[in-house]
Length: 495
Ligand code: UN1
Image 1 (cartoon, rainbow, N blue to C red):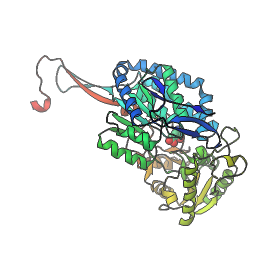
Image 2: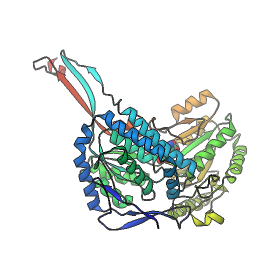
Image 3: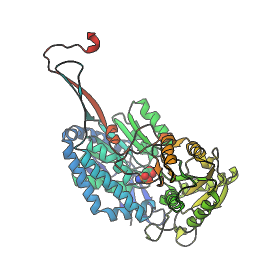
Image 4: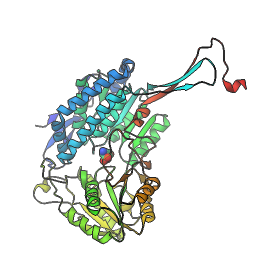
């Protein structure tokens, strides 16, 4: 019997008014049903928004450091439940335990960062143009925030959004991905146990197209924070734009790693293996393109193919496994279709390209780690986000060409260059068009106290992480205090 989970609305765990449910299936073992979840409808969302509205004033008036203490407690509870959460997460989305532990750790780090940031939400005091007048800025909460998150980081990404949203004094309606609703539910349980008052956080389960759309369109939700695909991001942006809602979008990536001829090749190899095939390639920061200096191209490619061949596929709960399944059958078919397209476009398939089957792999949706060589911009496998274990390899004659190739994409999230030449490294830091650049590290591995986000079609200019996300989740307020006791016209009206 699979576990039956509920929504959390207005301080109570409850069924959806629709009476309908959906199953959450383990992508490594399809007969393993992780749980059954309510399929929420418009009236559930209305109730969640109403509750969030009722809770707003008291929560926003609680001193921020007190809210921060609740976040600290939530971090402690996550530490205590880390292994349990990691195991459920591996069951519901497939990535290996070492990675789901890391995902929970990112949530813990984010909670503790919120604890500190709650005492640091600085404003400014600024000299006035006029005598006996004092100018300052402070932050106010935004109101009710809708949080819609993807399945590939079922703890880290909800944590990135919920901790700063709550610490900033907002109330929340949260919809985790329908592929990973169990981890999202555990995070809400933890926040409640830590002391977030009833109605401040409301959890509604369901699909993005149904429940996500209802949240985005709800007139009483003031802001939306969404991570997912660029195509869904566009739709959300249009809908939220119509209502002048504040909106933060973290969307796709087509991230590249450059390997220069002077690079430490073993290090670069480890980097690309981890960047391209960690999380089975299903990160928005995944390395999906590799640009190799032509003098070392053949040698490095051969090393890469050999090392990739040795990666062990299987159930992520098995500690000896390197690469888990892809999230579901429809994703596997999409990936397979891209392989067909790549071959037709003239790219050279040097490894993989097929469903991975045989033994334990037959119980789930596995795909062989795949490498294409001779890829060029303009091919669809180069231009489009595949979100799977497919790496496109290209050749560059020098640094300028390598950077030009790296920039030849509509996306701009993460990027990487391996070189021992300090001049090349600094040139790359300046000229690469991406929100994040790693020098001698893979494209994945963002830290929660640093800004996270990208340029071009990767987003709409906001950043998660660091202090930047606290700006997103609060409204700046400018205050003038005139203690002169008379009407002082502003300087513009005096001169
Ligand atoms: C994502 O893929 O959506 O930098 C987020 C990383 C992780 C987060 C990735 N810390 O790869």
